[in-house]
Length: 338
Image 1 (tube, rainbow, N blue to C red):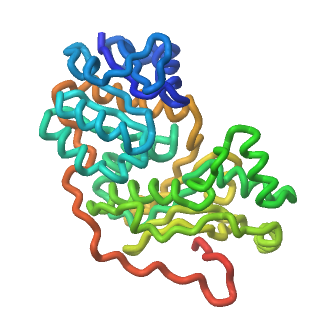
Image 2 (cartoon, helix red, strand yellow):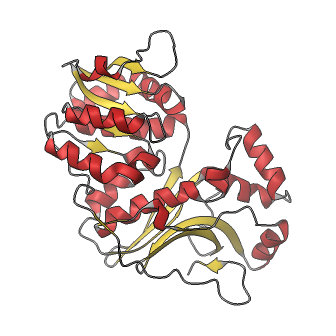
């Protein structure tokens, strides 16, 4: 029996518990053992949860912790403490990975445990591990991804004649957008995710603050109509290419695999010198898809107790030689993905 703890009983944390319960037979088949959620921690006073992280980290039965709290604190403090106790941590927290991922990865290595973050980018889409392992030998020349389901849902709905405000309101009513949607629609969420992906494939640490960031709030219904007239669609992309990194709306030709990625789905196109284009597609957010990615990391950690899984972050050095992001061509409102 592998005993674990979940930090944060929100959407993803609750989903992790649900995935483990529903998929126990499949988990045992691939792991050779059962996973048991021994503790759930939440800062709220809820029945059946603990509020003291020390109860968890001082329990020798706990081998893996799922950090699904989001934000920097107390997630950073709790993760730091767990890793120092030799407990592996799996997270969906892109903000924490971007801000402290290198430091936490080094602490994990020093204490013979692991810090994994498959769920931090792309929800249920396997993208971190393929970049870290399957194409690690490749020179990746470009990553271009639709990495935010909220923005993609809004832009998809604008194709039916809705204004940005109308499409945003509908996204909020359906639970696809937060009451304060700024992190999504201003591009910050996508910027954090493309910074993580670029760091993985370059051996350099790109940070969120280095990403040239444009959102979708200025996109009009006329922009959508003009794009459709030219057999294109408008998508918010995170792009790493040729030493620069940005988040911005792009015109996507119908010939691109990203053209047909609609609604809340994500699509990530990775280009390598030998493999050419690889396309990763699926639900980029949501309770169960994201939780499934967390559980995938839990299984990897459970197979490697008292061992450090190299996540390709511990030895990253800050980027100091970023190339200037190309300007939008004169006479155009958007860059075109070519």
